[in-house]
Image (tube, rainbow, N blue to C red; front, side, top):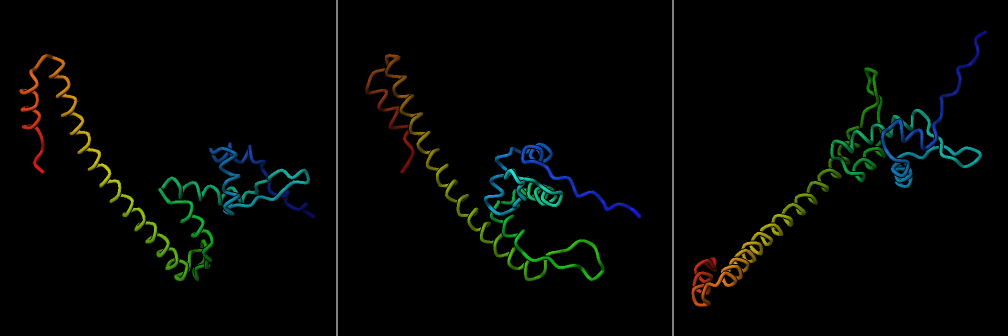
Length: 161
């Protein structure tokens, strides 16, 4: 008679973090978000099972590809279905549609933010040009250029409104 297989080895938060290349605080944050909820030892220590580590590795891969934690959390909540031909479970069509909505909303938010940043950069460039003209005027005055010449030069450099 063969002996039963030993239970999978659980890792403490420190060991799990080291194996995944993140900080223990990252794992605790993911727990707060409900991405992975480790079991607790009798002493209330977090213990990560191999399935937890696989899920966390997936989350970290998705983060490295630029997915937000909101999208990842939403994706992980979607039900999976087993393909008829076997293999790994996949997202169902309903899950994919829901995920498409989530990703579309995030893309729209990002588009809005990028437009705002472009406006801010344009305003910053205009202010930068104005400050350069002001500095040039002050430099010329400090170099002894007469007031009327410096003012005439400044008016000539002013952009058309």
